[in-house]
Image (cartoon, rainbow, N blue to C red; front, side, top):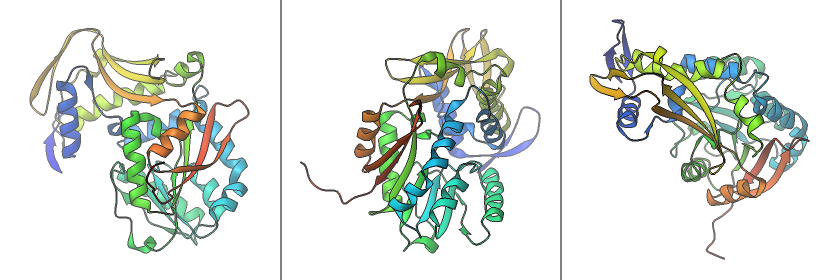
Length: 325
């Protein structure tokens, strides 16, 4: 970590990869910054607030599914697996799984260390007999998991349709990285949001209370704070769009006027109307989801959805790879 002085004179440590991604993203056309950098402490708190909004259906719908399928999941995965959760956040859905399957250990992985430790303490209190091993890391690449679970059968947990934040190519790479981290014979319980009308999708990412807007704009606040940025945050607005051709919601930060600013001492200019693309949320049909899982090295073995077909949860297994056909 390198120390930076922000515009207000405070000092902070900046992640070198955050710096590299922001500088490269602002220099390219169209401009884009990876969504994983939303999740500093403030961003993580704002996202948790988003999940409680009336417009944001994915969280409550997935919780409803998980509440209903616990016995079926246990029957399929068996007791004694080490649960490895990728991007655990506040772990609000995790107790539903842990309470259902009698795991041997729980390893939450998240890039936001403070938030990770806070949620891990809460989960340890709720499950005092469970070994909880928080792991601060970027799970986008294969990881060497804690030795304490090296010999345990593993169940990956990836709720929230976070897989939709990645392009199909990146999603496939992530699924393969998960397979490499968890090993052959592991299983994966993953949530995926379904394709539906823009009248439902757009409000879920552009709520009336402006919480998602604050979440998006917090990325600029983080750039100013950690990378000595001078971005005029009030000159930008949050934009959410449905891209039907790519079956995804896109989030952007749009300049409302011509702006000049610096990041890490480097100058940038943006014209009024120009955007920084900050997030995608891809939606999948049932067949699309199964193809994606197979491309990532996972064989689907079960699928559950809600009565309205808004969201789906899949269970897949890392079976031995075989040559075609």
